[in-house]
Length: 253
Image (cartoon, helix red, strand yellow):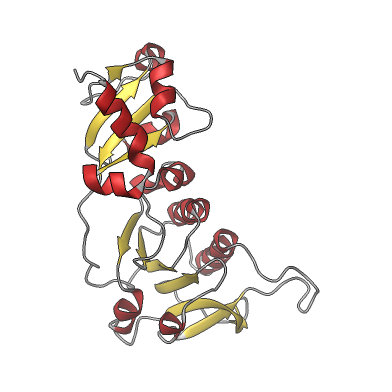
C-alpha cells in the first residue's frame, strides 16, 4: 500500500497547476461520483480515501490508501473536499483518427472557461458524441475544474488537441463543417446531416477567422420571437446543447 508522505501530499495538491500536471504526468478526480465513473477509464497512480469511504465503496483491482479527512483537505482542489481523491496517469496524446466527421463530432476553437469545457463534454456524453477536436489553446481537460465539471463524462468522451484549421481544411469535401455565427442561417430552417463537424467558438470572440474559413454551413440560433430585444448571445455551453439537441432531433432514435 502506498504511504502518503508529505512530498506526495504536496505533489497531489499541486496538480491544479498545468506545469505540475506536465511534470508528473498525473491529474486528479475528486468525489464519489467522479471517481467511480473514471476508475476504469484511466490508469490509476493513487487512490486516497477515508476509512468510511473505503468501507462503503469496493474498488476491485485498485488498492486505496486510507487517509484522514484532514489529508484529503490538504490535497483537494475543491472548496468543500469530499472523502476520496483519485490520481490518474494522463493518457498519451492521440492523432486525429481516420474518418473523422463520419460521425457527429464537436470542434472547440479556443474555449477558455473550465466550467464551459466540462459542460460541453457532458452535453457530448448525453447526446452520444464520443469525439471532440480542440484547438491547442483550448483549456486543458485535465484541469481539476474541468474534470469535476464533466461529472464523469471525461471517461467516455475523447478530446484530441489539434491545429483546428489545418485539420478541418484536410477533411473530405463530403464532410460538412457547421459553425455557430450571429449572421448564420436559422438552425431550425436549415437541413442538417446526422454526421459532420460542429464548431463552437471562444466565449468572447467566437470562431476565429482561420477556422471560420473552413466552415461550410454557418448556423444561427435565433431568439424567440425572432428579432426580439434579448441578450447579445448565448453562453457557449448552452449554445452547444441547443445545437447538438437540434441535430439529434433530426435523427431517428
